[in-house]
Length: 422
Image 1 (cartoon, rainbow, N blue to C red):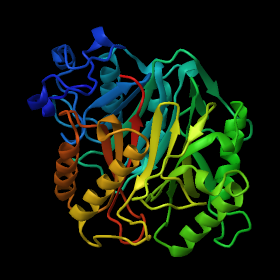
Image 2 (image 1 turned 90 degrees about the vertical axis):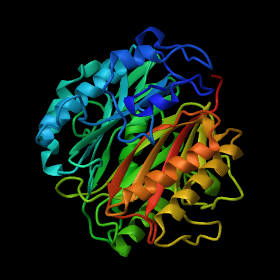
Image 3 (image 1 turned 180 degrees about the vertical axis):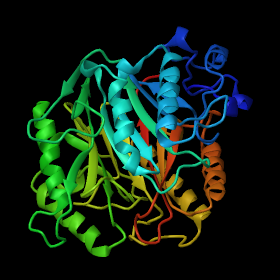
């Protein structure tokens, strides 16, 4: 993992993998070596908070999130912040011997979605068409720390076996010339949209999404049955009938594809803005290889809804975990600290069921209901991870402030773990 100014107190030999700057671009170091090179090259690279490492690289994939932080004041305006955010991403990748050519997926978070077309032009211009990443733009309620207007969450890969995927008759994601990118056995799709439709429509937006996702995967030689991890962002999710239509459409398309216990691991969130006329946006990960679905008896099981986690090769993708118990009851209602602690307990149970530990988690994404006390979350998250890790290295990650999730839930956390050799 990369070192930032925020985490210098933990600059000591670690049992977790760390990178030693550009000179160690592909070499993971264990309990030896120095991280001073990475510090010297990019001294101002930061995660949004010390609770998250700046980035993580293992198994041929690199995870990094950046915003417009830097040695000077934040730029004014969304487009100016997007320009600096892209430059920070470039610097982060350069510090580990990579470039924008290595990006396979880029998620762009905006507090003012009206600026999405202008930011999309910047994003598309930043990449060579033959090496363009798949993209997903999302509207956020807020981005923290304060005055952030843009954050970008990226996945890069050093795997040489790579292919761009474009599907006929499916609209391209905003800011990209491709629908998906395959690296090795993994396929990362960009955003797939569905337009507004009556809530009682014969084919709900979530079914339209899955039809289009299937078309994208088929263009890459796969199909929906090869997908194992889905993310769904829905406008007006607070409306109960919207959520019901979402579930109806997914079952309409997935019941005949997956066994009840093998549904893709999933996250379902409410986004305040997805663009004019867009009701639902999703992206996914699929694989050409075999999949497994490890389960913990201590976390809730939701057959025909989502799996707790899916393993593809040595990668484990854990579904969004909220404070809901095995009896499908929401715990610690109104208590952000209690719900955060419960989410992390469930992550631990699931990664251990897959044969790993919390030290195998390399990336988390945290979804917070807009308006919660973020300091309470960060304190609980940091304390709970530090108690469970054998090293000082926190996973890479970021937060998203959204306007809806499951009723009475204030926080949800998903995770990616690497279970292979280090």
